[in-house]
Image (cartoon, rainbow, N blue to C red; front, side):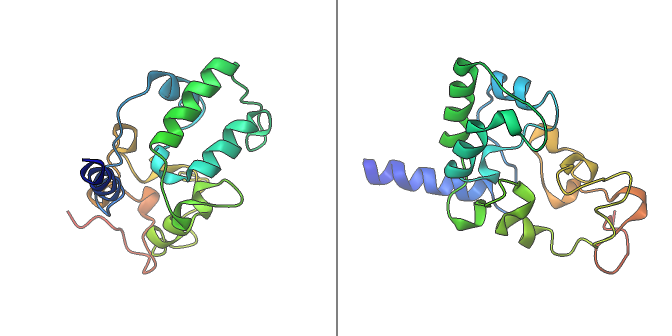
Amino acid sequence: MKLLAALALILTGTMACADGGKLSVPGNPKWKEECGSCHIAYPPQLLSRENWQRMMGRLDKHFGANAMLDAGDNKQILAYLQRYAGSGDRHGAASLRISDTPWFTREHSEVSSNTWPNPAVKSRANCTACHVNAERGDWSERGIRMPGGQGRDDGEDDDDD
């Protein structure tokens, strides 16, 4: 039975991070409220358990802002993030930036370097600039709209529709 449960978790985690799929996890209103108040509430799978531990442990210096939470909220959100965190080295970054993970780098290797500083994008952290359905957990290629005519490496718009 334990083996079956472990296989189910592995399969679910793999499917959740599959290219073109959804990054879906059970909702957590406190995570959505607190993390989503300043930026998109990034899916837990995008960072490792260790990265979430470090990030939640230093919210007073959260990428230049003080994002401190009360201890109870911090503990609840951390438990949620760690439960659904990504696994393996591809989901970890010393900087704690999702955009510095090997997974992010591989997935965005086709994006032209002039896309990131585009005023409609501003930075690699602004997922919703291109992933228009990200707030709903849909990160599929079909839901990508490159802002301002920006394309991938060839400079062409990614939208073939």
